[in-house]
Length: 336
Ligand code: NAD
Ligand code: TDX
Image (cartoon, rainbow, N blue to C red; front, side, top):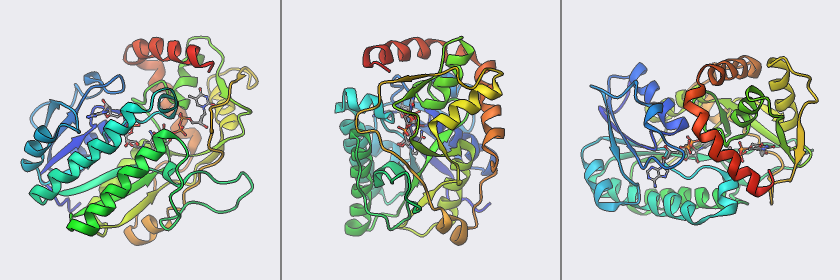
């Protein structure tokens, strides 16, 4: 692979997707990596401890710290930004950290890459497009209008618009990707799939918001990382690419699949309070990424990826035990 960088700065590299991406960089390029991460409740050194060493160093800090970010960016030739507040339910309870990290943090990164003419790839989400009707045959494409509905997705949309403005106005060298819902190892147990897997492992019934009818478009985190590598390698500067793997499923279907794979009756779940403003359906049309850049996902069977993910949580209880306690205390307060 022709990878256009030797020194990569990965803000948010101690989180779920960022740490997976760092592992992909190590396996598929000869670049070295600096992880910049604030180690919020969502980030952990235990996620990356087995890759820190000759090629991977770690700096604890916040992306909205202009002086720190400016210094670090000047020492690298590529920035791939995964740092964000990423959980919708948290953004509904307390949006302030979302504005700070997702908006002010992206602004600080943009000023630094502008200052030092360093290439940026910005990681974003399909939630910036709002939601689709259940019976709408269409999917999100690169030309779908932005219409975010939660505090989380509004701050991600704001960060994307900042990147686009810096490309248009200052000519920074940047690309953006908007990906659908990820699953896989090292995902925080606040998120839907690991929450339900760890519930079942602990003998607790899975909990579906509302009716369980809402639809998400699932992609394995390895496929997200391989798509980002491909965009960095061959994507056109200034462009947005949508990443998805045709993984649409209702939340009810996902819970029933988890129960089946874990040897439980498929009706052993509870319906709980709905999420305020709950987006109905997300669906990605990733044909630009497939046709223009020749990318395709490795995980084409959701059940195969889900089964491997269940095994990972079964075998890594020490990684998630503490976060499970604090997460469930939060959900108990919100009625979820
Ligand atoms: P995560 O919450 O698991 O990880 C976020 C990481 O960023 C953590 O390590 C955290 O400590 C760090 N961080 C938070 N605030 C910071 C700050 N101010 N400065 C430095 N570091 C900070 O999130 P994730 O699921 O890995 O998501 C990564 C990116 O991918 C986010 O931009 C998210 O919007 C996007 N995304 C996620 C999904 C998904 O399904 N999880 C889907 C599409 C896009
Ligand atoms: O216990 C639950 N029960 C439930 O029914 C939880 C935690 C969630 N849900 C529902 C809400 C959603 O319809 O499952 C679906 C998925 O929920 P989350 O895992 O919270 O993901 P979502 O809100 O769809 O956002 C995710 O995908 C897009 C990521 O968290 C974002 O970071 C990403 O941008």
